[in-house]
Structure formats: structure tokens, C-alpha cells
Image (cartoon, rainbow, N blue to C red; front, side, top):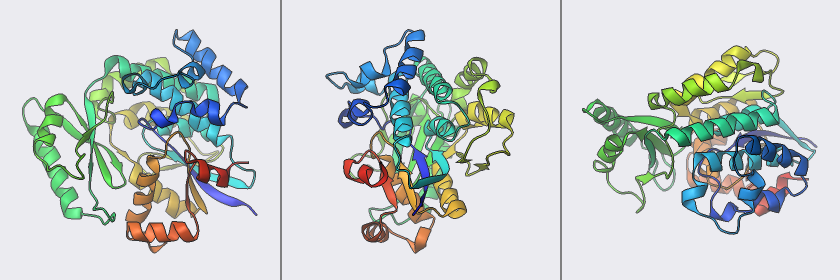
Length: 344
């Protein structure tokens, strides 16, 4: 019996210390795929993906860099997508932030090598320029109940700080129960000084992250458009859901518009991951939501997005946990046990 699934691809921040060796651990059988990626890295004068993955020691300073994290996450996610069991039918693909580039390749709108080239190029450009930074802050309580007044107050605070002389602060990603904010140092500090510390760790800075999905990335977007031609983009094989909740349908895509969105609006305007997950649920009603590796951190944002959208009448964390225990709906391939539920 076929299981339908929406495949969700992760973005930056998902390859951490526990993920070191992910490719060797799960994908030693995919030498041809990884060799192609390694050759592309070699042409760019960069260490190979398999070499970075097989290092003896993890360093956050190194592995959080865009030119290191991005290709590792791409290779891990694409290889995971190729490992799904035969009874799983992927009906749509989406992703968070950089995960949009991975989704394009998984869905067939980019070849796997072209997708790697896009990810490696954009990750390298981001690192070379490293304009601004990011932080995260929660907008739900510990049972994932929405706090609309709190969210509205935070958005008003962000707008107020952004109007102050010398400060830039903007919404970067609507990420389930979190807001990811981006801006310059003065803007980020202004927010940190204006909000209470929650759960003893928020607001939390994201190391080696630039001000993604804001106008501060205009120079990077322009360079990306110069280096990555429209001719790389083709029709997807399955539906793609972008950071606006918009669906790109197979056989009906304007590939010029897809290129333009990917290296334009997607880079310099806010990314609404919450809406993308909600749109996937409502449009495709899959049996499963499968988050590829590496890591498992995106699973929480997917679950929160489903709860916030009222999927299957869920309104809280407890509802989700009860439903997940009765009949798992969310699978993180970075979790060894859950991985076995969806791989051959």
C-alpha cells in the first residue's frame, strides 16, 4: 500500500556535532553521487564534501560557515531523499530557507549537480560577504499555544527598531513557533536589549548566519543571478511549495519566473516556512511529512506549523504528541529510529 508524503528539506544550522559523519554513516553506498559533488568542490578549490564529513573533530566555527554547512546539508538531504522506501510516493516538496534550493533539486527542477552548484555558490557568497546576522525568538508558549498579541507586539517592536537611525532589523523567517530575525549588529542588539530572556536561551544568535531573506542580501542576490543562469532551471517532476506558500506545478512552471523567485525574492524578502507547511498540508493532505536529514531540529518547526494551522484538529503540543504516538505523521530522517520507518 502506497504512503503519500510531503518531503521537507532543511536549511542552515542542521549539521552539528552529532551529525559529523552523516554521509559515511548512512550513504556509503552512494559513491557516484558524492563523487560528483566532490568534483564540483574541487573545481572551486574547496575541500570535498566527503572529506569534511569524515573529519575526526567537529568545530562550530568551521562547520557553521556557509561554504561548509551548505554543501554538507545539501548532500545529506539529497542522499536521504534517494533512500526512501519504494512504497512512499512524494506528492510535494518544500524546504526551509536554504532548503528551498534542495527542494528544487529533489523535485527535479534542478539536476542534482546543478542543485549542488547553486547551494555551494550561494553558501560561499553568503560567507564571503557575511552581511548582518540572525537571531531566533519564540512566539508560542511551552504547549505551542499561539500568542497572537505577543507576536503583534514583537512585530511592532521590530518595525520600531528598524526605523531608528543606524539600525536595521527585519523578519527573516516565520518558523513555526519561532520568529527568525535578521539585521545589522545595532538592530540585533536593539532587539536583545528590549525583550525578556525566555527559556534561559532566547533571544539566541545564530553563528555565521547573515541577514538572510532581507534587502541586506541584495548584493549577494545580484551576484547569484550573474553566476547561476536561468538555463539551469527546468520543470519539476513533483509539486514545489515555496516560501510564500505558492505551489509550482509540474508541467506548468514558468522556469524564468522560478529562477527569478529563487535568486530574487527568495533571497531578499521574508520566508514564511509556517505557511509553506500549512499549504502543503491543506493542498496535498499526505499520510506523512518527512523531514530529510541532517539533524532533527526542523521537526519541531514542522510540528508547530501543523498545530498552528489546525491540521487534523490539533491545537497544542499535547495534541500533536498524542496523534504522533497513535499514528506517526511526522518523520525525521535524522532520527535513526524514525529513519527506519521510511527507508528501504
